Image (cartoon, rainbow, N blue to C red; front, top):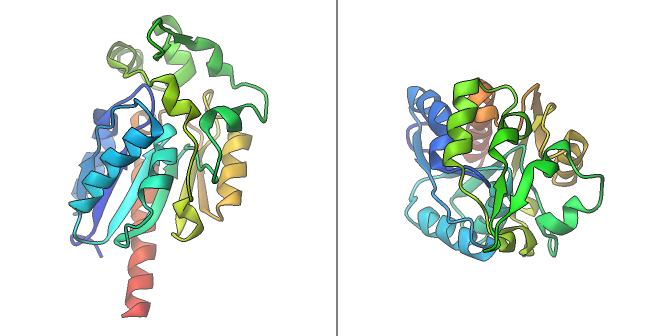
Length: 237
């Protein structure tokens, strides 16, 4: 299950599909077929719909990967998609039924990066450019963080209040990369979600943007999920 395996990457808030650039090249070097979604960040329902449309075009076994808010998206999008063989959460939200990012975040103290988020008059949430580097990508270079802050894609507040339906991680094997220096999703919250879903857990001393600062760790956990799914497929065959 290598060249016949598809990997679909789903970005989170304040990012777009290009955030995976370094990871995409590492996965391509291993022979995987990679697609990066461009979700609108307008609502959880909208973003799940776009991801499901992309999944419908994947005819081979597929590994679905989500970063941050993208974890909530893949949790809903993988339902009724039998060719999705594993879910990979990169410092991501693994919501349970009826939860939203907003409701889950209120169960503990706000992360350090929350103070950098500002709403505009149209209901979109932005990270203050002057605070972006420290909040979202502390271990990226100054130039990398500057570009990310400049091109950030703001989510609408509806994306944060949308409630999850039946979570796919209850039936699909899951993997979770905990980022221990994350200022946007507290590491204890990451560990709680990973444990709840029964995920295979790896960790890296990274900010909220490991695809920039630690792309090898991101590519490695995705490859491990592919290899695990391949072994399961061989046992079933």
